[in-house]
Length: 155
Image (spheres, rainbow, N blue to C red):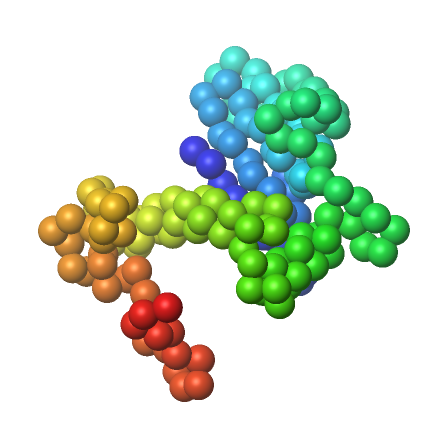
């Protein structure tokens, strides 16, 4: 199971992660606390609490690399600056990460939430981005927007 947390404004952290991922497995769990730090926990045999821990900075060249930092605010500010620079330039090729990556990463959690709320196992067509044979689930893929914050049918 994977849990994604965004808890950096008005709430507590979860396992030390403010914006990060928690991967739960049958032998323990891994908390990716931010863009360059992780901590792992191994369960004692049959227990629900960690026995051993190991943590550290993700090494250079690893699949998850430390994000850029500067004195004016850190990774998150640079992330938003890059996003707004691309919007202002109307050039998505200058993004450090494609918008589709964020869509795919967040879609998994949203699809799981819909399945959980309906209490059903669902089948999803990733090309059509619709549930197969379940209009109740498809209804939950969007919502009614209020003016003036309307979502156009075609972008």
